[in-house]
Length: 543
Image (cartoon, rainbow, N blue to C red; front, side, top):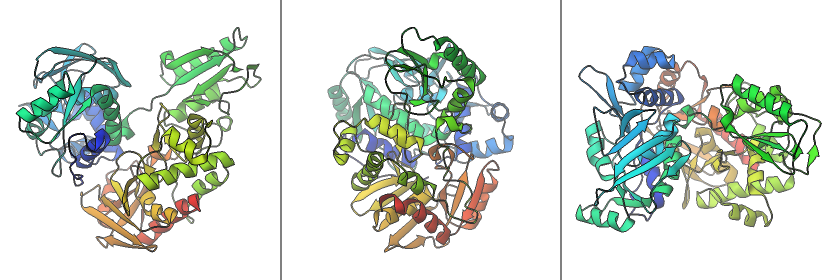
């Protein structure tokens, strides 16, 4: 686990800052461990105590691997009954451990440990959850309906209290977590009532935020913890002009592709208007290439099941799309072999001028502020008030120069992360997060500045510090190596490798980590190799 961030006052640092503190004291999970955690949540949500053999069977993993995760990095996050079965895990409990926050999931009665847990559990479980709690200070019942994508029903004005993170971990035991955090993270009828309660409790470490704001942040929080194990949300849009003669076969091909991948037709939105018709867009991208925008026309390149299926699989993190969907993503994590990959600079260089300006503006904004730019920031930077920023981000995402979520928000602008990661980078007065270890090493070369990188060995938790001055790097400890690994050969970098490219205190811990993850394609890089890789990928982007 990593060290906690500096404390912030009440709402002084904002909710994102507060949750960044939590991310830093949470267990650092690799993709396999994240998969085990999500599997445990989902099996527990079925309403019965969970055994390790049952969890291993459900996940199709060796029992020894599951046991190592549960008793290792996830130790302290779960509670067992007298028979050794897990009855509570990291925010979710069976009725054996009730709380003020009752959940109804597929007819099963469960409990959340604290109020914020009710907001991210639907995303983890992939289900809409009915929440019944009570307002602190008044005792008035409160009901919420929370879907995987956010709140569907809530009483106006309700707020949540958050306890600021402290120490180096959330607690060594479940009772410690409950007493230190969960018992003080509650629903209140108003912000004033919450502050009055905190004052009466003598607490100066409470921050208060509206439920709607908390729900949005909770989704980003859980993505930062176990995002690699959560299914990618896929949005499909079927566009047509009125009375399009080719709509029916396109719809049939779409539904066949959805059925083949086990996706429900409910993910499809049908829109009638002035479009090239029929067009099928997956996460905003036309499966036949292009943006899907344009004047009303009867298109000749009708979408068929093959390109539709390829686009869906790519959106779900599976195999790469066919050529019809645009250029395949050149994954940053292909084994380095006899040369350093330079795909990202080449893709950036080939962008149209306006799009390249947008890309550079995004990188410069992160470097100057440590945060993601707003639409207005981007338009101002490129002096284009009429710029369709959503379309620009989608095009950059198609080249894997950035990554966006289903709402079109930035989740990566390589090498920068808009949300906390294990790799903090100090650029003078600005603090930023890097997507992976190689990104962190490449950042100062891209910006032509000195930097201090703080990270941790994911196998042992030992802190790692890299100081780059005038292009020369020094490492603490001196034996640091970098594991260059990927969970798959294709797909977005944020999905395939950003969580598996890490600093390690020495080669032995790196090899132990790799050995425990036989599914990874991994290479151990020495310091010079890693620096060269980071510099060659990122230095040209702002040259």
